[in-house]
Image (cartoon, rainbow, N blue to C red; front, side, top):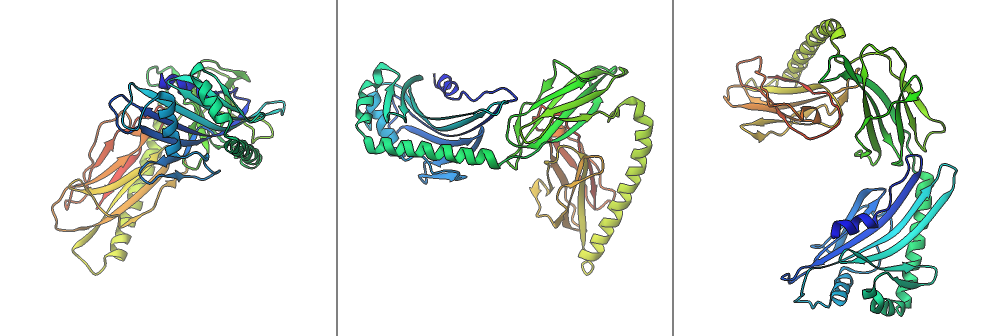
Length: 428
């Protein structure tokens, strides 16, 4: 019942070419038969992103403050549940749920037409209950059970005027927000060997860092859209922008021009990025990858050895009993990575960290170092958490010196996007 009501309250699906912005606050309270105190929650959502929530412990809103929260308090809302359900503060005959959603929505259509809508409506026990009409300053009963509530609320003229002004403020904010906040997408296209068919490749188009949320993406062959692609859906980034990835299987030897076409409101015209025909992990490139990998490995080992030596020499020149233990993870994608060094499963305070840095092949690397005792016989591990290891078991790499043992525990993470696994090195 509750879930159905939530779905009915969120009619924010739109065509990919249609731009949609919304800001709303949602309140829910639930009272069970044997429950002495009701359950209450409230959240604020902007463009399908949770921006704030109400703390019952502190009785304040926590999070971003884009606009002022609706005027009615938590106690007022709980009182309405008791009134509508004929419950008392200490007793209720059965389970009851009261919900409210108040806010505004902007729809911008491809022809430039803009549709604005403000709303304040309630649901009771999974059914529409009552809604506010800001034009008449009256309440519209959606359920026979709401007739008495309508008569009571219609007489509260001061509150009704306040709600009307609140909805006007919401509309003004969302118009300003719509005209100022945009960010163009970065578009990337690449292929990998299909895991289940040596004759197929997986062609992927990735767009990221775009705002607003709505976007249209298509992978095309000779300028004709390819159907039946797999999509990650639109996902949020940490910086409040969005990303999306779509993939299709293609024949390895098929001749044709593949490109990724992206349409977004921040762009003056659609963007097309062509696939250059290269494949990241195909067998046809294995020999060259092997040669390049060997050269890269030599360079990495040289740099690791030199940097470790320099750090030892510069950071612990007067203490011969100390070593600098360094963990390097490289070649991973996407960017987000968690890495720490542990001693007997206890996380050590980093001596230094480079932070996540880009490689030349659009992957990333990170290096973390800790100071350890030279003669201490302990188990040291480099723990790495990354989405590229969602289907891999733990593995261990032995340190090149006999002083201590380093390992790379490959922790699992669930993510449907294609990723690149980190290559992990431990030096002491």
